[in-house]
Length: 498
Image 1 (cartoon, helix red, strand yellow):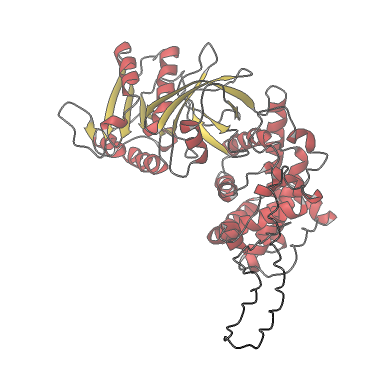
Image 2 (cartoon, rainbow, N blue to C red):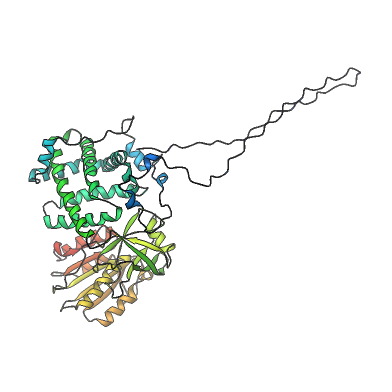
């Protein structure tokens, strides 16, 4: 990887050459020798003015001609439309720390392409033995996942520098996502339908980054090289062949999904902010108008990029069912160190333009069924729950009941309660129960405790289909308790990525 050299400019307090000081003389007649003429004082060089233009970009960092059209689309203009100087790793950066244990000297060699016979063998479908080797490999790499994924991206960016501009400047979150995706794919290998749906969603979503079919080959070679390095002696020809077979299947599913999506939808949507309402100190409700019709289901989410943080995408759930006017509503809470969420809450205003990726998520209701629904929403996780209730109302309850538990820390944090109460008044099949965890409540008010614990105490919930949205810890805890309270595991729906 081409590193950026730092220019150290030191400015200190210097003293000019001392002038000669006349000596002390007595009053005698002897004349005093005139002092030597002092050496002229040389002024300090002037400080150069601030440059009016940014420094030139090294040629090696310019995007390749094949990718330039994708990088120069007439889309939302970010604050930094082309800033390779931001894509650096320096002292203290987690990426640099991950490389600290590596041997010094030169960039890593390019991954060698597979031999023809290996290439032919890799085109065969994966075997059960291959899947076992994949799981074993991930188990070995998991303790050093940060270093392994850092090495993978280093290989990718060193040997394919034109790809670097497709990623954010800070890579920590991206590296975590890569390993989570590998784990998810490995764990879903025995579920072809679920795996195909997951990978198809990834393939469609990667279009918004500018990913093309040509990128999958280099990614696969660098992935194999990184895994081989961090598996050590446990990596052999059989393991490499297993990874090549599985990666071929994975990439084929993602490419096919992306090509199908390209026939009917853009890679991303531009969305203008038409309304920005602050509901409480750190929560805002944004209403957006897209440049093209945006298809989604209640319970799903979008990924969003702001002009203030280019190439940084974050997920946000839709807070309403699809509307006739096509407007979209998001509930956003500014979280600590949340670049995108803080910008949306505190900086966005009507007229700003955002970018949205395609809708994703599996937390959708089957309106042809008759099972009762149990919905748990914590914090702004109540947004997709509200959308699900609206969609049930639009389709008709079909004889089912819907129980909504709305959790927050304090009563004042229940910003969506009035809207849910209004829906409850209009629909007899809907029951709304607020739950607070850090406040003593008056009798007849909100229930007290953690939302998952409260729901479990009011069980059993046999036969219900459950929908959970909120902080990851709340979703995991509640899901476990609901299974113990009678809800079948396959009927517990959530998207932990949120």
